[in-house]
Image 1: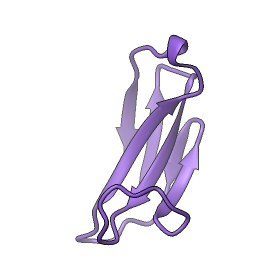
Image 2 (image 1 turned 90 degrees about the horizontal axis):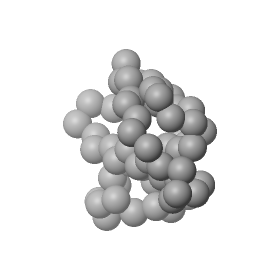
Image 3 (image 1 turned 90 degrees about the vertical axis):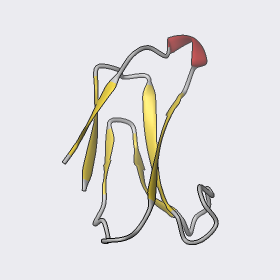
Length: 68
């Protein structure tokens, strides 16, 4: 699965997999992260959380994402 950011360059993305503790950010649950997108092999039936965050809250603006 690929996720790409559209229209904003001040965000980064983290993808977490739910392993029974919900949206827990840990080394074990972090699937991928990046400044323009993320890519991973999705498993049927698994739950993933896509988190977009900013380096600077004052630079946040509208953005889109493309999932393929």
